[in-house]
Length: 494
Image (cartoon, rainbow, N blue to C red; front, side, top):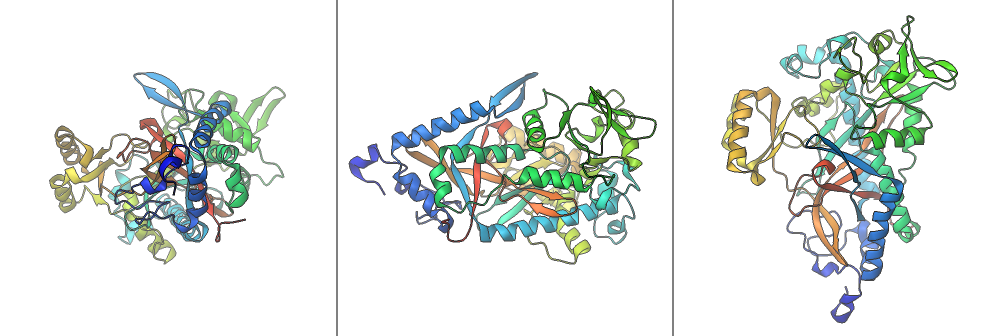
């Protein structure tokens, strides 16, 4: 640790770092570095303040040069903002990650079996494991999907599971994102930025790679093609440049070497096949990685006034002539009320105990649990069943009395649409807050799981961090930022 006069020029003075009683990803309660983080902590402590600040500035410049941005909708305007990146990586040991990845694979297998069951025999309801009314009342149940058999029986090909670490140091699943999960491009860009501004640490640490994700994604998409051709035609369907995740759509198309298309670029012919309009004529499309919500996907089947989708694409999918990734209707399991039953699904379909636990969840449609939520709302996080991006939720301890009353009214008026969870003591990690200064901030983690012929999990994922002191909201649209996530193999050194 740097002392006295050296503090003016020394790097981060870890002796001043206070965890505040939370589980910290990098620093123990006693102030020492966790085993997997030791080389990183030591290195950042040795860098001079000037050097550390220049690396931070370099990271910001790199983000701008690479054009990494996201869109915020504010007051009816679309505002492009530079991606907020924190220099200090989040470090997890490979041994711990292996167990976590196994838990994620187990979860996604069960979720896909559940979705398939929902649209076929519905055995899980008949056997009383999950109440049937949850699906009847679900905004994401699609009657158009009943009886459909997608290739390999996979509905949710790409899943982004949000993990949090609580005070006990264990990972818990906070929610499953099965409709149009986003964020993976930022995971890949975070790694590129880290390599540029902290190259020495990549030479001295055995940091497991994430840059194989585009290859794995392409192979997964090709594996679910309905036509057995050597080079299936794969496209990414985007709502267009005004979508908040457009950067990611364009980035992934470029990384995969596939066409980025809008609805008007595709056409369904009388043979119920999807074709892409090109300068040399129509080309048949085998797989559509769609980044458009179900209800805007096909004006023939859903919203008739949608100009984002492709008329007839549901017909083509139902006929087995094109694969839609993720499949329409997969969102039936992307419901925070259904989420509460995933451990039971794992036992029911796989005959196994859940490796990764859920966060304790109160279902407001149960009269006893509703009573508890109403009486303890100031202590709880209340979430709507189908919102994403942190919208529509209330963090009880940080909310006003007026907001408490508003949410009491909302959960009592529409109990099926709300769940509540304890306000977790979310884990923290160091964030650069000034020249040579670091403070703890709360964070979560979104790994991505791919399922086609094979099942794979990213080595780490997208770490989102609440940049505001004391805040638990990590979403970039609401003031959050991000870090690179390093899974470091045993021993740490290369």
